[in-house]
Length: 233
Image (cartoon, rainbow, N blue to C red; front, side, top):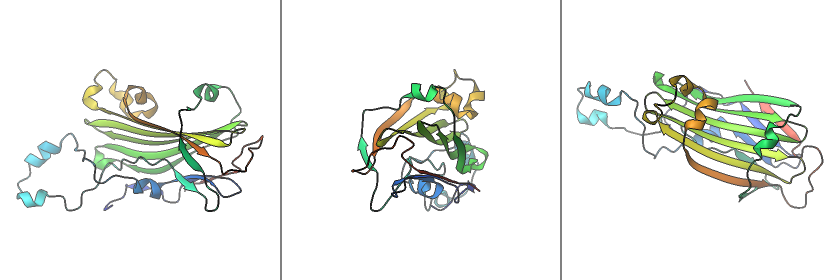
């Protein structure tokens, strides 16, 4: 990748790891490795007008090494563990959102920004991760949010949920996207609010998985993943 986001927090990490070594972490470096530089390039709203105003020969318009300048990533986390590791299997089981709505003491909460770029003043591209730990469970939300002004809004969410009496975690990945021209019925003030605009973005892809703990291991009554490490600078 010839260019990195304006603000990349390479030292920021959210790591959830068991004493036996297996677990999952979220970091900017691995997230950027998932950027697809071969997919179709998005042009800013003023791209054609800008190009028409240029008088250089055609060869100067060629892209020597194309890359996704929006830094769109479908990163879902980095699995940890050598001798013991989580097993990823497809599932039809979904995260129980009603349980997340239940009133329960929040023992720990943290939000970590992994990278952000203002796309040369044409919008924003950001990746952040939040964790909320309760007595009976924990919940993680990894969110990639992209807004290209006048063009589109894209949101890739990875949700991770674990209940203390289960020997697995549920991971749900959802990709949403809409052109700005299809959001004329939505107040523009919501375009900068990911939590508010998400309901107006059609779902493009959903992946549901179980991250199963290594065999011969019984879940404990308390949180099964013993260590939560957050590094933020």
